[in-house]
Length: 515
Ligand code: B12
Ligand code: SF4
Image (cartoon, rainbow, N blue to C red):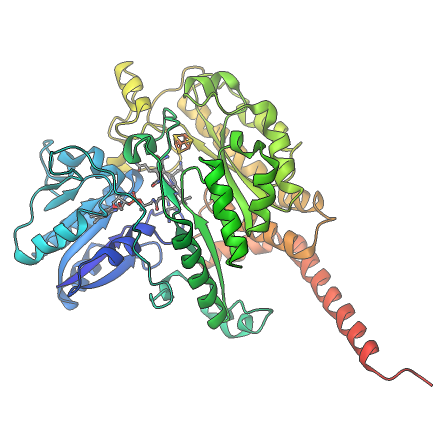
Protein backbone atom coordinates (compact mmCIF):
# COMPACT_ATOMS: atom_id res chain seq x y z
CA UNK A 1 0.00 0.00 0.00
CA UNK A 2 1.17 3.56 -0.72
CA UNK A 3 0.68 5.88 2.25
CA UNK A 4 0.72 9.67 2.17
CA UNK A 5 1.62 11.53 5.38
CA UNK A 6 0.47 15.11 5.09
CA UNK A 7 0.98 18.15 7.31
CA UNK A 8 -1.18 21.15 6.40
CA UNK A 9 0.38 24.58 5.98
CA UNK A 10 -0.26 27.08 8.72
CA UNK A 11 -1.07 29.79 6.17
CA UNK A 12 1.03 32.41 7.96
CA UNK A 13 4.70 31.50 7.81
CA UNK A 14 6.51 29.14 5.52
CA UNK A 15 7.65 26.76 8.23
CA UNK A 16 11.39 26.78 8.51
CA UNK A 17 11.45 23.21 9.74
CA UNK A 18 9.63 19.99 8.82
CA UNK A 19 7.53 18.19 11.43
CA UNK A 20 9.12 15.25 13.19
CA UNK A 21 5.98 13.11 13.41
CA UNK A 22 6.09 12.40 9.67
CA UNK A 23 9.65 11.05 9.69
CA UNK A 24 9.00 9.12 12.88
CA UNK A 25 5.84 7.40 11.58
CA UNK A 26 7.60 6.72 8.28
CA UNK A 27 10.38 4.96 10.23
CA UNK A 28 7.76 2.99 12.21
CA UNK A 29 5.76 1.85 9.15
CA UNK A 30 5.75 -1.95 8.79
CA UNK A 31 7.74 -3.34 5.86
CA UNK A 32 5.96 -3.77 2.55
CA UNK A 33 4.41 -0.28 2.41
CA UNK A 34 5.71 2.83 0.73
CA UNK A 35 5.43 6.21 2.49
CA UNK A 36 5.32 9.60 0.75
CA UNK A 37 5.64 12.83 2.77
CA UNK A 38 4.15 16.21 1.96
CA UNK A 39 4.52 19.23 4.20
CA UNK A 40 2.08 21.90 3.06
CA UNK A 41 4.44 24.60 4.30
CA UNK A 42 7.05 23.49 1.80
CA UNK A 43 4.66 22.30 -0.94
CA UNK A 44 1.44 24.31 -0.68
CA UNK A 45 -1.61 22.42 -1.97
CA UNK A 46 -5.33 23.05 -2.06
CA UNK A 47 -8.16 20.53 -1.78
CA UNK A 48 -8.35 19.87 -5.51
CA UNK A 49 -4.61 19.35 -5.82
CA UNK A 50 -4.43 16.85 -2.98
CA UNK A 51 -7.39 14.88 -4.33
CA UNK A 52 -5.68 14.72 -7.73
CA UNK A 53 -2.41 13.69 -6.07
CA UNK A 54 -3.86 10.76 -4.13
CA UNK A 55 -5.57 9.43 -7.25
CA UNK A 56 -2.56 9.88 -9.55
CA UNK A 57 -0.16 8.37 -7.01
CA UNK A 58 -2.51 5.47 -6.14
CA UNK A 59 -2.42 6.33 -2.43
CA UNK A 60 -4.29 3.79 -0.27
CA UNK A 61 -4.17 5.61 3.09
CA UNK A 62 -3.59 9.22 4.10
CA UNK A 63 -2.34 10.23 7.56
CA UNK A 64 -2.83 13.87 8.55
CA UNK A 65 -1.32 15.50 11.64
CA UNK A 66 -2.14 19.01 12.79
CA UNK A 67 -1.93 21.49 15.62
CA UNK A 68 -5.10 23.34 16.59
CA UNK A 69 -4.27 26.35 14.43
CA UNK A 70 -4.10 24.22 11.25
CA UNK A 71 -7.03 21.95 12.01
CA UNK A 72 -9.60 23.76 9.83
CA UNK A 73 -7.31 23.31 6.81
CA UNK A 74 -6.60 19.72 7.86
CA UNK A 75 -10.36 18.94 7.91
CA UNK A 76 -10.89 20.54 4.47
CA UNK A 77 -8.04 18.48 2.98
CA UNK A 78 -9.33 15.32 4.70
CA UNK A 79 -12.83 15.92 3.28
CA UNK A 80 -11.40 16.25 -0.25
CA UNK A 81 -9.38 13.04 0.11
CA UNK A 82 -12.29 11.05 1.54
CA UNK A 83 -14.52 12.34 -1.26
CA UNK A 84 -12.34 10.46 -3.77
CA UNK A 85 -12.62 7.28 -1.71
CA UNK A 86 -9.29 7.21 0.13
CA UNK A 87 -9.41 6.65 3.91
CA UNK A 88 -7.96 9.28 6.23
CA UNK A 89 -6.49 8.78 9.69
CA UNK A 90 -5.79 11.85 11.77
CA UNK A 91 -3.49 12.30 14.75
CA UNK A 92 -1.70 14.96 16.80
CA UNK A 93 -2.55 17.21 19.73
CA UNK A 94 -5.81 18.68 18.43
CA UNK A 95 -7.69 15.53 17.46
CA UNK A 96 -6.44 13.79 20.58
CA UNK A 97 -8.48 16.30 22.58
CA UNK A 98 -11.30 16.68 20.04
CA UNK A 99 -11.68 13.16 18.62
CA UNK A 100 -15.48 13.45 18.44
CA UNK A 101 -15.18 16.58 16.30
CA UNK A 102 -12.92 14.75 13.78
CA UNK A 103 -15.20 11.69 13.75
CA UNK A 104 -18.39 13.72 13.28
CA UNK A 105 -19.79 12.75 16.67
CA UNK A 106 -20.05 16.31 17.95
CA UNK A 107 -22.84 17.44 15.66
CA UNK A 108 -20.67 18.43 12.68
CA UNK A 109 -19.57 16.46 9.62
CA UNK A 110 -17.15 13.54 9.84
CA UNK A 111 -13.63 14.36 8.60
CA UNK A 112 -11.60 11.26 9.49
CA UNK A 113 -12.11 7.53 9.11
CA UNK A 114 -9.94 6.96 12.15
CA UNK A 115 -8.29 8.96 14.87
CA UNK A 116 -5.00 8.11 16.62
CA UNK A 117 -5.09 9.38 20.20
CA UNK A 118 -1.92 10.58 21.92
CA UNK A 119 1.48 9.25 21.04
CA UNK A 120 1.11 6.94 18.05
CA UNK A 121 4.53 5.26 18.02
CA UNK A 122 3.00 1.93 19.00
CA UNK A 123 -0.46 2.26 17.41
CA UNK A 124 0.72 3.36 13.95
CA UNK A 125 1.88 -0.12 12.79
CA UNK A 126 -1.56 -1.47 13.83
CA UNK A 127 -3.35 1.31 11.96
CA UNK A 128 -1.41 0.55 8.78
CA UNK A 129 -2.10 -3.19 9.04
CA UNK A 130 -5.83 -2.60 9.64
CA UNK A 131 -6.03 -0.10 6.77
CA UNK A 132 -4.33 -2.56 4.41
CA UNK A 133 -6.96 -5.17 5.36
CA UNK A 134 -9.77 -2.60 5.03
CA UNK A 135 -10.76 -2.91 8.70
CA UNK A 136 -9.86 0.51 10.14
CA UNK A 137 -11.36 1.19 13.56
CA UNK A 138 -12.64 4.63 14.56
CA UNK A 139 -10.24 5.18 17.45
CA UNK A 140 -6.74 3.93 18.19
CA UNK A 141 -5.64 4.59 21.75
CA UNK A 142 -2.21 3.89 23.24
CA UNK A 143 -3.32 1.42 25.92
CA UNK A 144 -1.86 -1.81 27.27
CA UNK A 145 -3.58 -5.22 27.46
CA UNK A 146 -5.48 -4.04 30.57
CA UNK A 147 -6.81 -0.90 28.90
CA UNK A 148 -4.42 1.35 30.89
CA UNK A 149 -2.82 4.31 29.09
CA UNK A 150 0.67 3.34 27.95
CA UNK A 151 3.34 5.91 27.06
CA UNK A 152 5.93 4.57 24.64
CA UNK A 153 9.41 4.24 26.07
CA UNK A 154 11.96 6.04 23.92
CA UNK A 155 14.69 3.56 24.77
CA UNK A 156 14.18 1.62 21.53
CA UNK A 157 13.85 4.67 19.28
CA UNK A 158 13.72 3.83 15.57
CA UNK A 159 16.74 5.06 13.60
CA UNK A 160 15.52 7.79 11.23
CA UNK A 161 17.46 7.31 7.98
CA UNK A 162 18.49 10.96 7.58
CA UNK A 163 21.26 9.87 5.21
CA UNK A 164 18.79 8.71 2.55
CA UNK A 165 15.50 10.58 3.20
CA UNK A 166 14.53 12.94 0.39
CA UNK A 167 14.88 16.38 1.98
CA UNK A 168 14.56 18.46 -1.20
CA UNK A 169 11.33 20.15 -0.09
CA UNK A 170 12.96 21.36 3.13
CA UNK A 171 15.94 23.27 1.69
CA UNK A 172 15.75 26.90 2.82
CA UNK A 173 18.35 28.16 0.28
CA UNK A 174 16.62 29.54 -2.85
CA UNK A 175 17.42 27.44 -5.99
CA UNK A 176 18.87 30.46 -7.75
CA UNK A 177 21.73 30.82 -5.22
CA UNK A 178 22.44 27.11 -4.78
CA UNK A 179 25.45 26.61 -7.07
CA UNK A 180 27.08 29.89 -5.98
CA UNK A 181 26.61 29.22 -2.26
CA UNK A 182 27.86 25.63 -2.51
CA UNK A 183 31.37 27.01 -2.97
CA UNK A 184 31.42 29.21 0.15
CA UNK A 185 33.26 27.82 3.19
CA UNK A 186 32.15 24.27 3.95
CA UNK A 187 29.26 24.83 1.49
CA UNK A 188 25.92 26.59 1.78
CA UNK A 189 24.14 25.01 -1.22
CA UNK A 190 21.53 23.61 1.13
CA UNK A 191 20.44 24.72 4.57
CA UNK A 192 17.98 22.63 6.51
CA UNK A 193 16.71 22.69 10.04
CA UNK A 194 16.02 19.17 11.21
CA UNK A 195 13.84 18.31 14.21
CA UNK A 196 15.37 15.83 16.64
CA UNK A 197 13.87 14.74 19.96
CA UNK A 198 15.98 13.52 22.85
CA UNK A 199 13.10 13.09 25.27
CA UNK A 200 9.39 13.71 25.88
CA UNK A 201 7.26 15.05 28.69
CA UNK A 202 7.23 18.04 31.01
CA UNK A 203 5.87 17.94 34.55
CA UNK A 204 5.49 21.72 35.03
CA UNK A 205 1.84 21.95 33.96
CA UNK A 206 1.70 25.60 32.82
CA UNK A 207 -1.97 26.51 32.51
CA UNK A 208 -2.00 27.34 28.78
CA UNK A 209 0.10 24.41 27.62
CA UNK A 210 -1.06 21.07 26.24
CA UNK A 211 2.23 19.27 26.80
CA UNK A 212 1.79 18.03 30.37
CA UNK A 213 -1.67 16.67 29.47
CA UNK A 214 -0.55 15.13 26.18
CA UNK A 215 2.89 13.67 26.87
CA UNK A 216 2.27 13.31 30.58
CA UNK A 217 4.38 14.26 33.52
CA UNK A 218 6.49 11.13 33.18
CA UNK A 219 9.64 12.15 31.36
CA UNK A 220 11.19 9.68 28.98
CA UNK A 221 14.56 9.86 27.25
CA UNK A 222 16.22 8.25 24.28
CA UNK A 223 19.65 6.77 24.89
CA UNK A 224 22.57 9.16 24.46
CA UNK A 225 23.95 6.79 21.85
CA UNK A 226 20.89 6.95 19.64
CA UNK A 227 20.83 10.78 19.74
CA UNK A 228 24.56 11.01 19.03
CA UNK A 229 24.25 8.58 16.11
CA UNK A 230 21.46 10.70 14.64
CA UNK A 231 23.61 13.84 14.87
CA UNK A 232 26.55 12.04 13.24
CA UNK A 233 24.32 10.92 10.37
CA UNK A 234 23.09 14.49 9.83
CA UNK A 235 26.60 15.93 10.03
CA UNK A 236 27.87 13.44 7.46
CA UNK A 237 25.01 14.24 5.10
CA UNK A 238 25.62 17.99 5.29
CA UNK A 239 29.31 17.45 4.51
CA UNK A 240 28.58 15.13 1.59
CA UNK A 241 26.17 17.64 0.03
CA UNK A 242 28.35 20.69 0.72
CA UNK A 243 25.44 22.14 2.64
CA UNK A 244 24.47 23.04 6.19
CA UNK A 245 22.25 21.26 8.66
CA UNK A 246 21.13 22.71 11.98
CA UNK A 247 19.16 20.74 14.53
CA UNK A 248 16.13 21.83 16.55
CA UNK A 249 15.93 19.71 19.70
CA UNK A 250 12.17 19.78 19.99
CA UNK A 251 12.06 18.49 23.60
CA UNK A 252 9.75 20.75 25.56
CA UNK A 253 12.40 21.32 28.15
CA UNK A 254 15.75 20.03 26.92
CA UNK A 255 17.34 20.35 30.37
CA UNK A 256 14.43 19.03 32.43
CA UNK A 257 16.86 16.51 33.96
CA UNK A 258 20.08 18.50 34.16
CA UNK A 259 22.26 15.50 35.02
CA UNK A 260 21.07 13.61 31.99
CA UNK A 261 21.36 16.67 29.68
CA UNK A 262 24.95 17.20 30.78
CA UNK A 263 25.76 13.55 30.11
CA UNK A 264 24.21 13.79 26.62
CA UNK A 265 26.13 16.98 25.85
CA UNK A 266 29.39 15.39 27.04
CA UNK A 267 28.76 12.41 24.75
CA UNK A 268 28.06 14.73 21.80
CA UNK A 269 31.35 16.51 22.42
CA UNK A 270 33.28 13.24 22.87
CA UNK A 271 31.91 11.85 19.60
CA UNK A 272 32.55 15.15 17.77
CA UNK A 273 28.91 15.07 16.78
CA UNK A 274 28.47 18.83 17.18
CA UNK A 275 26.20 20.57 14.72
CA UNK A 276 24.65 23.98 15.34
CA UNK A 277 21.48 23.52 17.34
CA UNK A 278 18.53 25.23 18.98
CA UNK A 279 16.73 23.90 22.06
CA UNK A 280 13.92 24.95 24.39
CA UNK A 281 14.96 25.33 28.02
CA UNK A 282 13.13 27.11 30.81
CA UNK A 283 14.98 30.02 32.44
CA UNK A 284 15.14 28.38 35.90
CA UNK A 285 17.30 25.56 34.52
CA UNK A 286 19.84 27.92 32.99
CA UNK A 287 21.22 28.98 36.37
CA UNK A 288 23.79 26.18 36.10
CA UNK A 289 27.07 27.57 34.70
CA UNK A 290 28.44 24.14 33.81
CA UNK A 291 25.31 23.33 31.82
CA UNK A 292 25.67 26.54 29.81
CA UNK A 293 29.38 25.79 29.20
CA UNK A 294 28.44 22.36 27.87
CA UNK A 295 25.64 23.79 25.70
CA UNK A 296 28.12 26.11 24.00
CA UNK A 297 30.77 23.40 23.59
CA UNK A 298 28.24 20.92 22.16
CA UNK A 299 27.09 23.26 19.36
CA UNK A 300 24.17 25.08 21.04
CA UNK A 301 23.60 28.42 19.32
CA UNK A 302 20.06 29.50 20.21
CA UNK A 303 17.99 28.73 23.29
CA UNK A 304 14.23 29.27 23.17
CA UNK A 305 13.02 30.52 26.57
CA UNK A 306 9.32 30.78 27.39
CA UNK A 307 9.58 33.94 29.51
CA UNK A 308 5.87 34.70 28.96
CA UNK A 309 5.74 37.84 31.12
CA UNK A 310 7.85 40.20 33.19
CA UNK A 311 5.04 40.37 35.75
CA UNK A 312 5.28 37.76 38.57
CA UNK A 313 1.49 38.04 39.17
CA UNK A 314 0.80 36.96 35.58
CA UNK A 315 3.24 34.10 35.89
CA UNK A 316 1.61 32.91 39.09
CA UNK A 317 -1.84 33.09 37.41
CA UNK A 318 -0.76 30.68 34.65
CA UNK A 319 1.06 28.33 37.04
CA UNK A 320 4.47 29.41 35.81
CA UNK A 321 5.68 30.96 39.05
CA UNK A 322 8.98 29.11 38.62
CA UNK A 323 9.91 31.80 36.07
CA UNK A 324 11.60 34.63 37.98
CA UNK A 325 11.70 37.85 35.92
CA UNK A 326 14.37 39.20 38.27
CA UNK A 327 16.86 36.65 36.95
CA UNK A 328 16.09 36.93 33.21
CA UNK A 329 18.93 39.42 32.60
CA UNK A 330 21.53 37.23 34.33
CA UNK A 331 20.38 34.14 32.42
CA UNK A 332 20.64 35.92 29.07
CA UNK A 333 24.05 37.37 29.91
CA UNK A 334 25.28 33.89 30.90
CA UNK A 335 24.29 32.65 27.44
CA UNK A 336 25.60 35.69 25.54
CA UNK A 337 28.99 35.42 27.29
CA UNK A 338 29.33 32.10 25.48
CA UNK A 339 27.94 33.40 22.16
CA UNK A 340 24.69 31.53 22.68
CA UNK A 341 21.55 33.55 21.99
CA UNK A 342 18.05 33.54 23.23
CA UNK A 343 14.69 33.45 21.54
CA UNK A 344 12.60 35.07 24.25
CA UNK A 345 8.90 34.36 23.99
CA UNK A 346 6.26 36.61 25.60
CA UNK A 347 2.51 36.30 25.93
CA UNK A 348 0.27 39.37 26.14
CA UNK A 349 -3.39 39.44 27.15
CA UNK A 350 -2.76 37.78 30.51
CA UNK A 351 -5.11 38.59 33.35
CA UNK A 352 -2.87 41.17 35.02
CA UNK A 353 -1.80 42.87 31.76
CA UNK A 354 -2.85 46.48 31.24
CA UNK A 355 -2.25 48.76 28.26
CA UNK A 356 1.40 49.64 27.86
CA UNK A 357 2.51 46.08 28.68
CA UNK A 358 4.42 45.85 25.39
CA UNK A 359 6.45 49.01 26.04
CA UNK A 360 7.13 47.94 29.63
CA UNK A 361 8.38 44.58 28.35
CA UNK A 362 10.49 46.25 25.65
CA UNK A 363 12.09 48.52 28.24
CA UNK A 364 13.35 45.39 29.99
CA UNK A 365 14.37 43.69 26.75
CA UNK A 366 16.48 46.73 25.78
CA UNK A 367 18.62 46.18 28.88
CA UNK A 368 19.37 42.56 27.89
CA UNK A 369 21.89 41.23 25.36
CA UNK A 370 20.13 41.26 21.97
CA UNK A 371 18.25 38.13 21.03
CA UNK A 372 15.04 37.34 19.22
CA UNK A 373 11.94 38.44 21.12
CA UNK A 374 8.62 36.99 19.98
CA UNK A 375 5.16 38.04 21.12
CA UNK A 376 1.90 36.10 21.14
CA UNK A 377 -1.50 36.24 22.78
CA UNK A 378 -2.79 34.04 25.55
CA UNK A 379 -4.70 31.33 23.65
CA UNK A 380 -7.06 28.82 25.24
CA UNK A 381 -6.12 25.57 23.49
CA UNK A 382 -8.65 22.75 23.83
CA UNK A 383 -8.47 20.68 27.03
CA UNK A 384 -5.89 22.91 28.73
CA UNK A 385 -6.58 24.06 32.31
CA UNK A 386 -6.74 27.60 30.85
CA UNK A 387 -9.54 26.63 28.46
CA UNK A 388 -11.51 25.04 31.27
CA UNK A 389 -11.05 28.06 33.57
CA UNK A 390 -12.12 30.60 30.95
CA UNK A 391 -15.05 28.45 29.83
CA UNK A 392 -16.29 28.08 33.40
CA UNK A 393 -16.01 31.85 33.89
CA UNK A 394 -17.96 32.51 30.65
CA UNK A 395 -15.02 34.45 29.24
CA UNK A 396 -14.57 32.62 25.91
CA UNK A 397 -15.63 34.90 23.05
CA UNK A 398 -14.81 32.33 20.34
CA UNK A 399 -15.07 28.93 22.08
CA UNK A 400 -14.30 27.07 18.82
CA UNK A 401 -11.69 29.53 17.61
CA UNK A 402 -9.92 26.82 15.57
CA UNK A 403 -12.88 26.47 13.22
CA UNK A 404 -11.99 29.86 11.80
CA UNK A 405 -8.31 30.41 12.49
CA UNK A 406 -7.25 34.06 12.64
CA UNK A 407 -3.57 34.66 13.39
CA UNK A 408 -2.84 36.82 16.44
CA UNK A 409 -6.47 37.13 17.50
CA UNK A 410 -7.73 36.48 21.02
CA UNK A 411 -10.51 34.02 21.75
CA UNK A 412 -11.39 35.38 25.18
CA UNK A 413 -11.59 38.74 26.94
CA UNK A 414 -8.61 39.70 29.07
CA UNK A 415 -9.45 41.05 32.53
CA UNK A 416 -7.78 44.47 32.52
CA UNK A 417 -7.92 45.53 28.88
CA UNK A 418 -10.02 44.96 25.79
CA UNK A 419 -9.31 42.40 23.09
CA UNK A 420 -8.44 45.22 20.66
CA UNK A 421 -5.99 46.69 23.16
CA UNK A 422 -4.30 43.31 23.56
CA UNK A 423 -4.00 43.00 19.76
CA UNK A 424 -2.45 46.48 19.63
CA UNK A 425 0.12 45.49 22.30
CA UNK A 426 1.27 42.53 20.22
CA UNK A 427 1.53 44.70 17.12
CA UNK A 428 3.56 47.26 19.08
CA UNK A 429 5.94 44.57 20.35
CA UNK A 430 6.63 43.21 16.87
CA UNK A 431 6.84 46.60 15.15
CA UNK A 432 9.27 48.05 17.67
CA UNK A 433 11.45 44.92 17.78
CA UNK A 434 11.72 44.25 14.06
CA UNK A 435 11.77 47.73 12.49
CA UNK A 436 14.92 48.49 10.44
CA UNK A 437 16.02 50.86 13.26
CA UNK A 438 15.61 48.13 15.90
CA UNK A 439 17.60 45.66 13.79
CA UNK A 440 20.40 48.22 13.28
CA UNK A 441 20.45 48.91 17.04
CA UNK A 442 20.57 45.20 17.93
CA UNK A 443 23.58 44.76 15.65
CA UNK A 444 25.30 47.86 17.00
CA UNK A 445 24.99 46.41 20.50
CA UNK A 446 27.08 43.41 19.42
CA UNK A 447 29.52 45.32 17.18
CA UNK A 448 32.42 43.82 19.16
CA UNK A 449 31.37 40.25 18.32
CA UNK A 450 32.74 38.26 15.33
CA UNK A 451 31.18 38.97 11.92
CA UNK A 452 29.70 35.48 11.52
CA UNK A 453 27.86 35.92 14.77
CA UNK A 454 26.39 39.26 13.69
CA UNK A 455 25.35 37.83 10.31
CA UNK A 456 23.56 35.07 12.23
CA UNK A 457 21.66 37.70 14.27
CA UNK A 458 20.75 39.69 11.15
CA UNK A 459 19.45 36.69 9.16
CA UNK A 460 17.52 35.39 12.17
CA UNK A 461 15.94 38.80 12.78
CA UNK A 462 14.86 39.12 9.14
CA UNK A 463 13.34 35.63 9.21
CA UNK A 464 11.64 36.01 12.59
CA UNK A 465 10.03 39.25 11.41
CA UNK A 466 7.95 37.02 9.13
CA UNK A 467 6.20 35.35 12.07
CA UNK A 468 4.09 38.50 12.46
CA UNK A 469 4.52 40.48 9.24
CA UNK A 470 3.52 38.24 6.31
CA UNK A 471 6.68 37.55 4.35
CA UNK A 472 5.54 34.68 2.16
CA UNK A 473 6.05 36.07 -1.34
CA UNK A 474 9.19 37.16 -3.18
CA UNK A 475 7.98 40.78 -3.21
CA UNK A 476 7.65 40.86 0.57
CA UNK A 477 11.25 39.67 0.88
CA UNK A 478 12.55 42.22 -1.61
CA UNK A 479 10.77 44.92 0.40
CA UNK A 480 12.27 43.70 3.69
CA UNK A 481 15.75 43.59 2.19
CA UNK A 482 15.33 47.09 0.71
CA UNK A 483 14.21 48.48 4.08
CA UNK A 484 17.22 46.96 5.82
CA UNK A 485 19.70 47.61 2.99
CA UNK A 486 22.04 49.85 5.04
CA UNK A 487 22.62 47.24 7.73
CA UNK A 488 22.91 44.42 5.17
CA UNK A 489 25.41 46.30 2.99
CA UNK A 490 27.54 47.38 5.90
CA UNK A 491 27.98 43.73 6.96
CA UNK A 492 28.69 42.68 3.35
CA UNK A 493 31.30 45.46 3.03
CA UNK A 494 32.91 44.34 6.25
CA UNK A 495 32.91 40.74 5.01
CA UNK A 496 34.62 41.66 1.72
CA UNK A 497 37.09 43.87 3.59
CA UNK A 498 37.99 40.98 5.89
CA UNK A 499 38.40 38.62 2.91
CA UNK A 500 40.59 41.08 1.04
CA UNK A 501 42.74 41.64 4.13
CA UNK A 502 43.09 37.88 4.61
CA UNK A 503 44.04 37.41 0.93
CA UNK A 504 46.65 40.16 0.91
CA UNK A 505 48.04 38.69 4.14
CA UNK A 506 48.27 35.31 2.42
CA UNK A 507 49.92 36.90 -0.65
CA UNK A 508 52.50 38.80 1.35
CA UNK A 509 53.26 35.65 3.31
CA UNK A 510 53.64 33.50 0.17
CA UNK A 511 55.42 36.08 -2.03
CA UNK A 512 59.26 36.17 -1.83
CA UNK A 513 60.68 38.82 0.43
CA UNK A 514 61.82 41.93 -1.48
CA UNK A 515 65.56 42.20 -1.91
C1 B12 B 1 8.68 21.90 17.48
C2 B12 B 1 7.42 22.62 17.88
C3 B12 B 1 7.12 23.77 17.19
C4 B12 B 1 7.92 24.31 16.02
C5 B12 B 1 7.25 24.06 14.64
C6 B12 B 1 6.68 22.77 14.42
C7 B12 B 1 7.64 21.86 13.68
N1 B12 B 1 7.98 22.17 12.46
O1 B12 B 1 8.05 20.89 14.24
C8 B12 B 1 7.76 25.82 16.24
C9 B12 B 1 8.81 26.27 17.20
C10 B12 B 1 7.82 26.66 14.98
C11 B12 B 1 6.39 25.82 16.89
C12 B12 B 1 5.55 26.86 16.85
C13 B12 B 1 4.28 26.85 17.39
N2 B12 B 1 3.77 25.92 18.21
CO1 B12 B 1 4.68 24.29 18.62
N3 B12 B 1 5.51 22.78 19.26
C14 B12 B 1 6.57 22.16 18.92
C15 B12 B 1 6.81 21.01 19.88
C16 B12 B 1 7.76 21.49 20.95
C17 B12 B 1 7.35 19.72 19.31
C18 B12 B 1 6.54 19.09 18.19
C19 B12 B 1 7.06 17.70 17.96
O2 B12 B 1 7.71 17.46 16.96
N4 B12 B 1 6.84 16.78 18.91
C20 B12 B 1 7.34 15.41 18.86
C21 B12 B 1 6.42 14.56 18.02
C22 B12 B 1 6.94 13.13 17.95
O3 B12 B 1 5.17 14.57 18.68
P1 B12 B 1 3.82 14.93 17.92
O4 B12 B 1 4.05 15.92 16.87
O5 B12 B 1 2.78 15.21 18.91
O6 B12 B 1 3.51 13.54 17.19
C23 B12 B 1 3.11 12.37 17.90
C24 B12 B 1 1.60 12.26 18.11
O7 B12 B 1 0.94 13.49 18.26
C25 B12 B 1 1.10 11.49 16.94
N5 B12 B 1 0.80 12.19 15.71
C26 B12 B 1 1.06 13.44 15.31
N6 B12 B 1 0.61 13.66 14.06
C27 B12 B 1 0.06 12.50 13.64
C28 B12 B 1 -0.54 12.16 12.43
C29 B12 B 1 -1.03 10.88 12.28
C30 B12 B 1 -1.63 10.49 10.98
C31 B12 B 1 -0.93 9.93 13.32
C32 B12 B 1 -1.43 8.57 13.15
C33 B12 B 1 -0.33 10.28 14.53
C34 B12 B 1 0.16 11.56 14.67
O8 B12 B 1 2.16 10.59 16.69
C35 B12 B 1 3.42 11.21 16.97
C36 B12 B 1 4.32 10.17 17.60
O9 B12 B 1 3.82 9.74 18.83
C37 B12 B 1 5.37 20.79 20.44
C38 B12 B 1 5.30 20.22 21.82
C39 B12 B 1 5.55 18.74 21.77
N7 B12 B 1 6.34 18.24 22.64
O10 B12 B 1 5.05 18.04 20.91
C40 B12 B 1 4.79 22.18 20.37
C41 B12 B 1 3.31 22.30 20.06
C42 B12 B 1 2.95 21.34 18.97
N8 B12 B 1 3.21 23.67 19.58
C43 B12 B 1 2.15 24.28 19.95
C44 B12 B 1 1.84 25.61 19.64
C45 B12 B 1 0.60 26.19 20.30
C46 B12 B 1 2.63 26.36 18.76
C47 B12 B 1 2.36 27.79 18.31
C48 B12 B 1 0.93 28.05 17.91
C49 B12 B 1 2.84 28.70 19.42
C50 B12 B 1 2.50 30.15 19.19
N9 B12 B 1 1.66 30.66 20.05
O11 B12 B 1 2.99 30.76 18.28
C51 B12 B 1 3.33 27.96 17.13
C52 B12 B 1 2.62 27.75 15.78
C53 B12 B 1 3.56 27.34 14.70
C54 B12 B 1 2.97 27.04 13.38
N10 B12 B 1 3.82 26.64 12.51
O12 B12 B 1 1.84 27.16 13.09
C55 B12 B 1 1.27 23.39 20.80
C56 B12 B 1 0.12 22.85 19.98
C57 B12 B 1 -1.10 22.61 20.80
C58 B12 B 1 -2.27 22.44 19.94
N11 B12 B 1 -3.34 21.94 20.52
O13 B12 B 1 -2.27 22.75 18.79
C59 B12 B 1 2.30 22.30 21.27
C60 B12 B 1 1.74 20.93 21.56
C61 B12 B 1 2.99 22.87 22.53
C62 B12 B 1 2.08 23.48 23.55
N12 B12 B 1 2.52 24.56 24.13
O14 B12 B 1 1.02 23.05 23.87
N13 B12 B 1 6.14 24.64 17.51
S1 SF4 C 1 7.51 24.45 30.94
FE1 SF4 C 1 6.99 24.66 28.75
S2 SF4 C 1 6.45 22.57 28.06
FE2 SF4 C 1 6.46 22.54 30.31
S3 SF4 C 1 4.29 22.84 30.82
FE3 SF4 C 1 5.31 24.87 30.85
S4 SF4 C 1 5.02 25.73 28.78
FE4 SF4 C 1 4.54 23.53 28.69
